Image 1 (cartoon, one colour):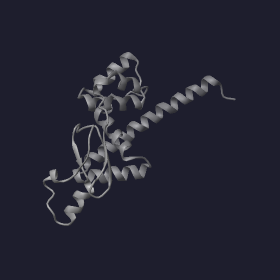
Image 2 (tube, rainbow, N blue to C red):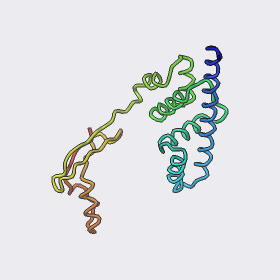
Image 3 (cartoon, helix red, strand yellow):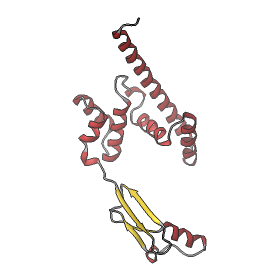
Image 4 (cartoon, rainbow, N blue to C red):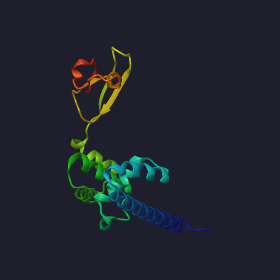
Length: 180
């Protein structure tokens, strides 16, 4: 029978190996992504996600972490969630992700604590929802940018474009909603 302490050590070893493999995966994806032209990158993300049975967003996160923390900066005893949180906060705040990670490690923070410690970086989700008075289409938009932006019906615009009408002046369309 395996002892409890031995089992815990085995679990720790498996977790370290899993983190190492995730770093290897992230760096390999980054290398592949960097080989692609800008137009090929979306296809690369889609293909990689399909082959790995995950989302394109997860592939993008792996690449972003690999870019933010090059091969010499990986720490096997630090969770991947903490690295991802540092990158996310960095993207919102413009601060260096390595500095954010250093601060988090000094303070003993986990991923959720990093996000909570930078509330000034959190952008609230804006919403605009309404019904078009012309075609009765329901329109709902969620965005983190564009507060106060007037939304017009994309179906009416698309219909006009398909029928060859000019759609440059969007003021002629009914306002469906305003992002708030």
